Amino acid sequence: MAIDKNSNAFTFIFAVIMVVVVGAVLSFAAMSLKPLQVKNNTDKKMMNILTSIGVEAERTNAKEIFYANVGKRFILNSKGEIVTTSEGEIDPTNTEDAFNVDVKKEFRDPTMSVDDRNYPLYMATIDGEEVAIIPLVGKGLWGPIWGYVSLKSDFNTVYGATFDHKTETPGLGAEIKESWFSAPFIGKTIYDETGQLVSVNVIKGSAEPSNPHEVDGITGGTITSNGVDEMLERTFGIYDPYFKNNSQITMKQ
Image (tube, rainbow, N blue to C red; front, side, top):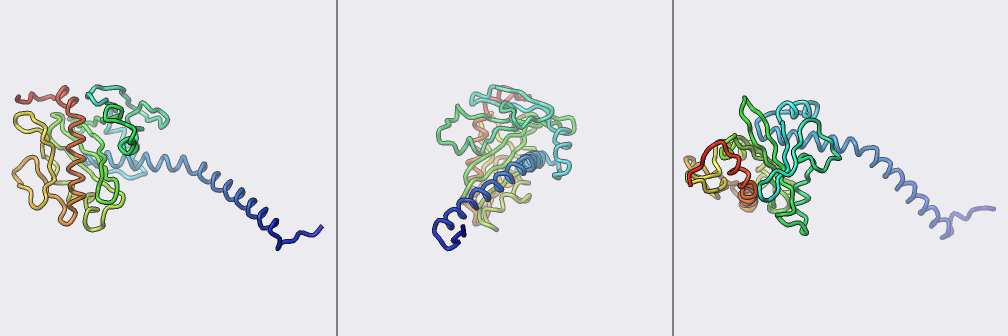
C-alpha cells in the first residue's frame, strides 16, 4: 500500500515522530551534559569565592586551590546561629552544605521570609589569619546582581570583594564586575567606633577617601550602585548577630 506523503495524516504522523525523536535527543544531551554543567558551576563559584580573598584560580585548579584555602562552611539562621557545619570535599547532593545553598534562588522566592532563608558563611585562612566570606545577592537596574565580600578576623574590616551581574548596562552598571570598582572596598570597615553597623556605603559622586565607610559609585550607573549599596547593608545586617557574638575584638557600646 502506497503512502500518500501529501496527505494531512502523513504530515501529522511525521511531525509527531520528529517531536518525539528530537525530544529524546535533547533529553539525552541534557542528561549527558548535566555532570559537566554542575562541575562548571562549581568551579565558577569556587573561583568567585577565592577572588574575594585575593586568590586567583582557573577552572583547571579551582577545586584544589579552594580546598587549600577555604576550611569550614557554615549555614546560619537569621539569628546568627550556626545551623550546620561542613568541611572537606563538597557533596553536591548534600543540602546541609553551605556551598550548595542557592542564595539567588532563595532571594527571589517570594514565599520565603528572612527567617526561612539559609545564610552561608565560609571561613578561609590567609597568611595565618581567619577570613570570613559571605555571599551577596540583590537587584540592579535590569536584573540580579551578586558577589562575595570577605572580612578580616575582626568581622569588621573588609579583606576583599567581588561583584557580578547578569544584564546591567555595558560601560555603566556592568562596571561593578571590574576590579577598579571592588578594590576600594579593601580596608573599609562596616562598624563605626561605637560598634554601630553602618555598612560600606556606595556614594554617588565622590566618596571621601578618608571615610572608612565610603566608596565611589559608578558615574552614570546610579541605580546599579544603589543596588550594591542596598545589597551590602541588608546582608551585613543579616550577619550582624553572628559577627558581634564571635568578634575577636571588643566593640565600644
